[in-house]
Amino acid sequence: MSDQTSKPVVVIPTKSVGISVLLTVLFGPLGMLYSTVGGAIVMILVNLVVGFLTAGLGLLLTWPICVVWGVMAVNAHNRRLLAGSQG
Image (tube, rainbow, N blue to C red; front, side, top):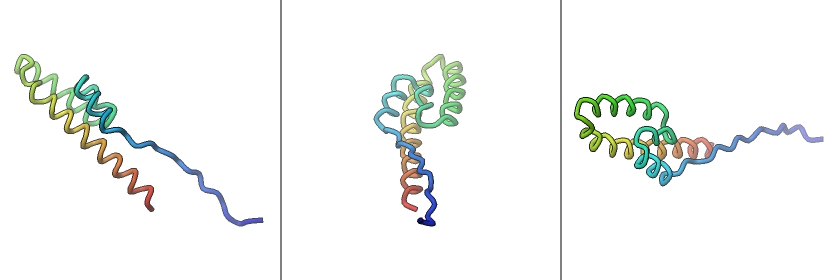
């Protein structure tokens, strides 16, 4: 009989940058919930304030920021997953 104990393997799929871009372009900060929940909450609040103060024109600036933040969050998530699987 072998003395080796089996370790459970947890499989966490990577996130797709394309899906992140699509969701964020279509839904703005709500689409960011796919890539980063904390960032989505921050940008929802920022969009509410900026949208109110600028009658919606400020969203032309904050919406692309949401897309970039979403892509960066997905890349960071995937990098952490791959770094953890190497060890």
